[in-house]
Image (cartoon, rainbow, N blue to C red; front, side, top):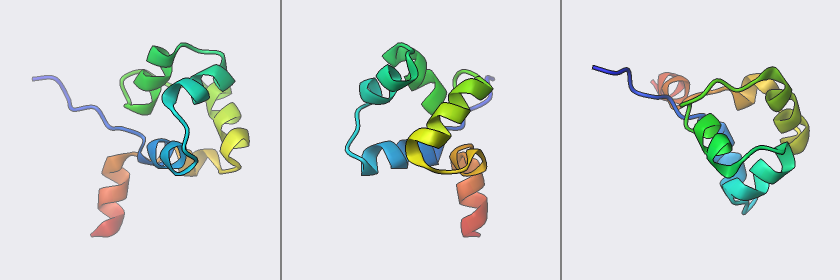
Length: 77
């Protein structure tokens, strides 16, 4: 059985909090909307250059952005 993907919960929350669509962020990163969707949902590895751009875009640390739903659930316990 395939391992369940781990979405990057903070990427999703920041995008939604800022009323952005995946296309808006993808355009900023110069990637396709589909590629960004894969990044956000943990279905594709995110290159370090993309993490750096996202960190600057949201003014958040890469560590914060890299948090997955699995990490988030562990903190709540």
